[in-house]
Length: 357
Image 1 (cartoon, rainbow, N blue to C red):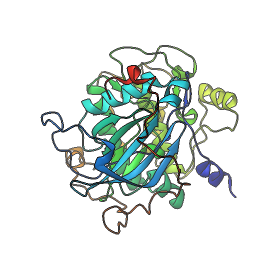
Image 2: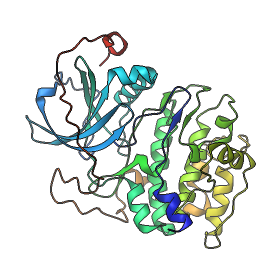
Image 3: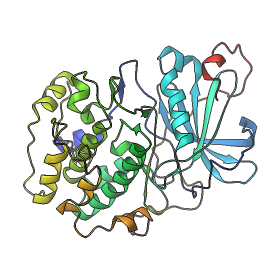
């Protein structure tokens, strides 16, 4: 197996100063109806038929589910309350719910509702049938320039939207980018997202994508997402991230040193943009300057990209997943199914920690 394939096939797990996050799979296909102005009936487990597992994590799993009322397919994230508490993820879990309820954007996963029983928390989201961009990248090894520009443009607009609401995402990577039936991006897994008007200090994210200021335990800002965008662009163009090591401490040293080996086939404009994103100097990092995201959009590498058409999803995606009808889950890996039954009565000692569910 080549060096590139070793990297791209390696499972990359997010880290947190308190513990590991939930696995990076969630959800979404349907249109974003105005979820902020309509009053939805309270959801419950009996409203759904739970089907196969789409992903697993430290304290739960994501199921493909079908509504017994409208027959539509959803992804339901089931979190075991005892494990969320044990792994000190109560704040992240409540934050994920509140942030998803507060956002509405075509490139973000849509949360339809939440509920809980004695043992578990449930988050009902749109089902995104095209699977992870990571899987497509792994099969392609690397993407040509025009493909990377398309995905980058959609992600950029999503990050710009989140930042306009003072939300830092903090876990950008191909595993967290799902493709809908038309091949457009949906960002998922908001377990590390946080409302940050100014600074935050929490160590969390995926090691390959951590910005220098996070590693150095400095207070950091939304600028960390622009660093991660640079890592994402590099990985899509090269097939591997610019900084890599199996040993996390050595990886962090490489990130802090900032020395990048540039593949000869990189477009000079792409290389120039990446140098402006992957800089530890926050006073020079694109996205974090006075021009904000516009500095990135107007860079020469994006010449010819119409961001207004991208925002309206009017640009045809470079890869359209083959979907064999609603509920097709063939683009997701198979996971061993659990025999655990949901909804059983048991002592509910943690309900007070999740009162908003």
